[in-house]
Length: 282
Image (cartoon, rainbow, N blue to C red; front, side):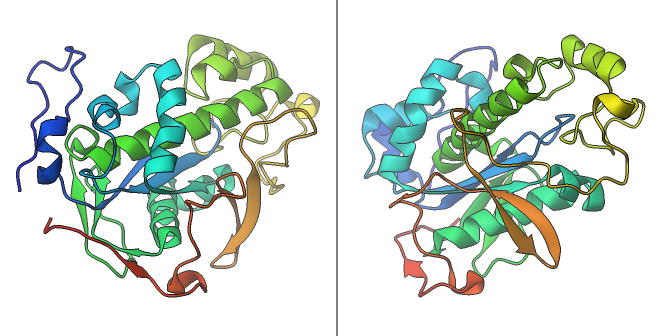
């Protein structure tokens, strides 16, 4: 198996995947996260499976690390990825991040996303941490979003999903600029924290230097209200459902329904049989 290497110059806007080499890329599940370093909101994870030889060459050629893909193109690519493969999205909530730390919350969301696909395929994850608790082999790939097409696709799907959620939340909390900084520590966000304090969506473990805003936010460190109430009519954006995971309430960002690509729950989540797919050694 041969993977096409990324360009040696990281500033060159050259997509890393060559459609002429599609047969050399394995048919695996790729998994990536978005929002791990944000000051608020969830960490969102996508798991994506497709067979590189079966997707349109133009789509394969445009996959890349989501940070290197401009927002308008990400919005175009996300539905194409969902139409050509199997996609599942999960989230680690603000409350869970504060309770167990962002690394554990991320790995837990990755596990749930992969299990939802109900596919018997190896898993490749961007970064240094393999996902525990999976029935199939899993390996971490440093720089995987420029080495594995499915990881690149997962990074695009996850970022598109999380950015849409943060735009919904920005309409409820307009003082932090989330529609532009999507929850990261931009100057306007930090200025909003200094002036208005934290919201129910801020990670307490990331923002302890700032107050809770007193009566302005009505939030205290011990507040355990659901951090993602359903969007009101007309807000749009991704839907968020509540689920219980090991006895804790964990908001779980699910793909909009109905979604024929999401597939049934895995046996580990109470679903039917796991589907076996073509894969190569990884």
